[in-house]
Amino acid sequence: MKMIISNLLSYSVIELINKSIPFILLPILTAFLSVEEYGQLTLYQIILGGGAIIFSLGMTSIISVDFNKNSKYVRAGQLADIIKLCVFSFIISLPVIFIVAIYNSNYYLLIILFGSLGTAISNYFLAYMQVSRNIKVYALLSLSLSLLSFTFTLILIIYFNMGYEGRLYALSIPPVLIAFLFSWYYFYTNKQCIGESNITFRRVIPLFFHQVSNWSRYSIDKLVLFFFLGGTALGTYNVNFQMAFILSVLVMVINKTFQPYVLKGLSQVKSTSHLLYCQLFLVAIGTLFIMFLILLFGDSLLGEGFKIDTTIIIILCIAFFFQGCYLCFCNYLYFYEKGAELAKNSTFCFFFTAVSSVPLVTYFGGMGAALSILVSMLILLLGTYRNYKRLKLS
Image 1 (cartoon, one colour):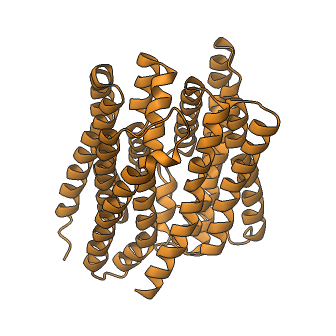
Image 2 (image 1 turned 180 degrees about the horizontal axis):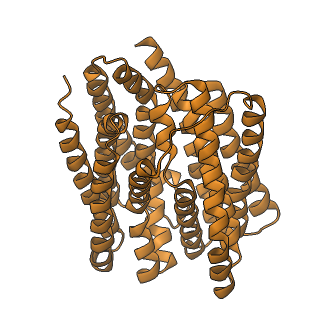
Image 3 (image 1 turned 45 degrees about the vertical axis):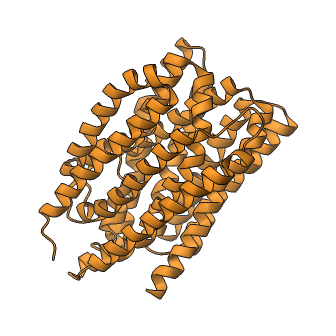
């Protein structure tokens, strides 16, 4: 338990530093960008996240699940194959990317998608270091990405006055640099340890759809807001979303802390119910704490012209509480390779979000977008819990 608490504090500090950067930058971005430009920036960030999933083929979870099952030779070979597939998927996508960029006269799309490739590869190394409990290297990689992006943003926006384009460069360049350096270092130092991996498309495809669903859950509503109500509506909503998203960060930190111990306990055929209950308890306490903190002090953290919407904050905090519970049960489905079940739940939620976002956003605006996330997360939680119960764990 002491080790869990120690890791929880370590991951919490790392993730809070990483995720606090958008909050630190919020007054700066709102000072140099209009609300509409902030909405435009949000759109490009959505594209960056979606591109990272497409290029990674959703294989990040394979690294976490297989770590305790394989030897170091298989793990090294697996990581090498995953990165090769990631680069290959990017290369075969280049013709389509160039056509779209030229047709729309939007060359920032190329920059963002190069950043997506770097983000996908960096996420592989983050997952590898996290599940191996190598907190020092995890911190080095994670904080390097965040602090480089932060520094580039300050220089390009404040000094060079490049507007939201400067933020796009700041989001894209650091992941590419970090991905290249870590790939070179890892495979140079482990070139004698690379063996055959056990990756099959049968495992990849369900996880890919699962990752796409996770991305769409927080993206489709924003895309609908942008295309139906414009960049100003998206910028206004996203300020509230970013405030509430700190709870999502917290539940993911809690899950990252517990996941290695849950997976190790399952691999050793030990009971992990005490870890599950403890994780759920922390998620509930964290939800109450973050929600009241935002409602009491949120307005004082925002720049002039921006305001906390109490209804949206409460709806999103409940949704992120459901997310925290969902992640608890996901660890068990990952271990027992129930990717098909996860994919079914995720696909259903994807279609629900896609269908419900348009009428909800059209009639209720930002509150409708928040409601779409809430219902989607509840459906995903109930479906995942049903699959968890079918495992019949003692």
